[in-house]
Length: 457
Ligand code: GLA
Image (cartoon, rainbow, N blue to C red; front, side, top):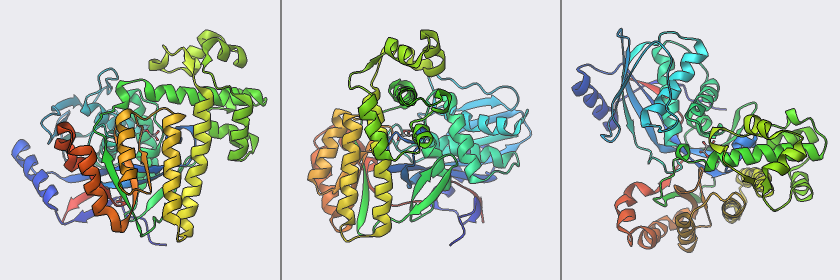
């Protein structure tokens, strides 16, 4: 097997790196010492199941967060962004790093990465730094621009403070530290950002975190299209409500089969405790959970907990207002989606002549489940997915958290040009807002490499 790519490499400067070096020089009158970059991702299948303990199947995309860094002896970390919409920020190297959950600006994601490294090593005073961030991942589009920023900041903070961590450790630290923003996300985005390898998608399993390369069929191309509705999961409670519903569903299933409730923190843990198959878990969902949403009172009664315990032990800060929980729908999505991920991987591994159709069907089923059971689509994504299917996609589905953002479509490689033109004509051109965004919103994506530190040759 080929050696995994190194975290630190010397490179000949690309145009983008040169531009960033020049901007750095003009702004700060010195040259960067090193660069760190972390890619965004597109999830091919396995949506909203990482935080339930199940494997997902993303690939890194070409678009990334690139940061130029120099170190100094001041007690300050200065942050700037090449995008003028993102304002400069500075913080002290010592003292607590405060993250604003209520109104998270771009730099708060950077701070999450710094905080993760500071806490992991118990650093009381971080190295002084000057950093300029340059991002090419469309923001709020479900392509993980914010997690890539957290990962990039974690990586550069490790390097600047002369610490060393494996990519797996970095991924775990960054996944944990992004939760300072208040979103209870899983580990997919950070894992693929660090552990991706050029040319291959990855099956990512959790606890323990491990990845397996998945070779995508040569005859398939994956096209990303943004529906142009922005979704920032930190500024609404949709995401955390789903996380909480899955947690409560796990407890309710565990209670029905007399498992120790403290061991039922995820839907995957319930399956492991029961030593059951995913089909058996789906049958258990049918048997135990009812279709109508559960009230707080019913949940408390079944679990034998008080209303206060529900609030403090199960609900998160921005889900305290929720009165009803759709447990049947969410659990059914999770167990069926977990099974589709494994089927997707085995189709890729076997490379049948009809692979592309089979993969497309799995993606379509995934989308329907996200729409109908997980309820994380939106009208614009529905219109876009429908247009993609009409334009020759074998499969098309929302990707990332949903409620806006991107779809990913599987297209036979030889019909990509036709597909791009058809989607352009039907979805983007008729609407001036979408037409203005089309260039960065509709593109073919190939599996890219993972996060890295660059030194200029
Ligand atoms: C966001 C989260 C991920 C994952 C996806 C949905 O991107 O950060 O951990 O849960 O949504 O699959």
